[in-house]
Image (cartoon, rainbow, N blue to C red; front, side, top):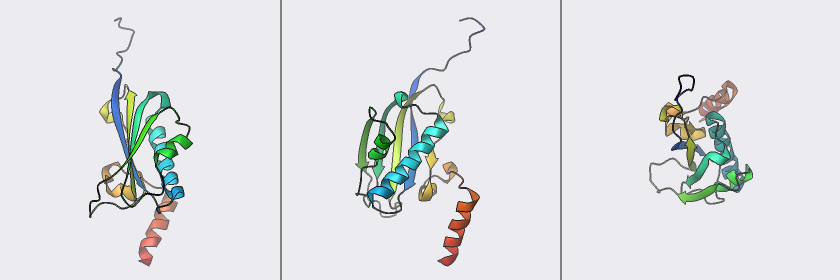
Length: 147
């Protein structure tokens, strides 16, 4: 290899993790939350559909109105292998939670992968939560004051 050519990182399959919560057990709430999560994961990591090996979705047992994988189909991911499953019903677990694991072929290192946790799922991994815009934070703070 000549000195003018940079070293290329090997192509490997990495996992991108993410989670969010649905506002209710309705198809609209599940699909909206899942689309929001997928769009953020794609944007933050520069994911291209052709580089995705598969996506694994899970929901907590209290979400049964729709398959979250349908949200990926709605985003145009028709050829990607998708599967859904149900999480364990842990008594102390987060309710109405949707989790995703994207198996992604990339040259990025583990430290370059950006995992995304939105809505109430920020409590699962506070070290990986996304800062909400100030206006949304103010709404959430005012909601807490009413309780």
